[in-house]
Image (cartoon, rainbow, N blue to C red):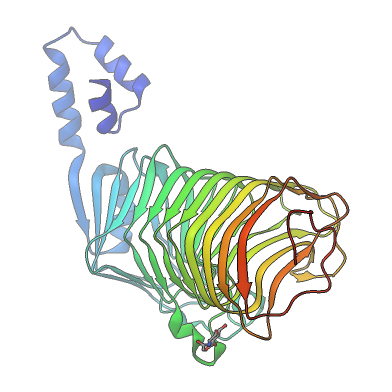
Length: 379
Ligand SMILES: *[C@@H]1O[C@H](CO)[C@@H](O)[C@H](O)[C@H]1NC(C)=O
């Protein structure tokens, strides 16, 4: 019964009060019926304002071919526990210079999914000016998955043409993202798409991203902080690779227990990347990169460096964000002839307890600028 009440969106404490207030057993079903009547099982919306207004009174919210007005968030924050959100057809957003987000969702045990043929079309070309977040037009971020808790999921969404960064996963715990496609390949034309990160993760725990298919112009994955994060079965192309960092200089600077595995990265600047901020403090520990296949990488196959400042490397590593208990295993494939196979720039003693096996990268240059490389690894 408690489970059933929970399914109806009642917290445990509320349920206990209700049940205690009436004689058992005959009255309890009446109360349940009343609650069930109050809350509509499924609501279909074709209008963004109506959807945001009525969101807490529907157990299932269908967003059907919604054209979201410009400068407006399709706001699914603060949903009732257990709510399902289903995107149907094409969701579009009007043009306006603003910082977004275009969509936002929060709550406990929330399941966001896409019906067959769904498309979330950010119409990025209207904003793309080659500058991303560095200047030009103010561009809306796309999808905030902030403060999702319990056991939440995002499944089967097809994201098209994000104006700038796509998924921001922050302050989330227990979120699984499955079979999401992000296609920003139109932004390759004249290099207009920029900073179109696929998944940015911060201050989150127990996050799994599986089967992502990404075509973009920045990180496929960027983890700035968080614990127990898995990225597996991903396909990334056109961007900057699978990144941790830059770590340091934020309010949360701990990255712990991350597994990035069974993925391919092609036509990208980097494959595997860890970068930490010069002079900052924090830690990167328990990270595993395993079974990653690279092709046509233009800068670095594997790059691990402790020297970032204002978004660029300084060339001088510092030791305040140690990278420990790192496993690099089964990284294979080819990088471009102008690129570097492996680059490791560590401070003295700030890279330790590494495992390094089956790294077979070919085609690029061998770096002569590596420093403090743990003995098991090599440039
Ligand atoms: C290699 O990747 C770059 C993007 O980094 C792309 O512009 C280029 O067309 C790719 N080359 C081949 C042969 O696919």
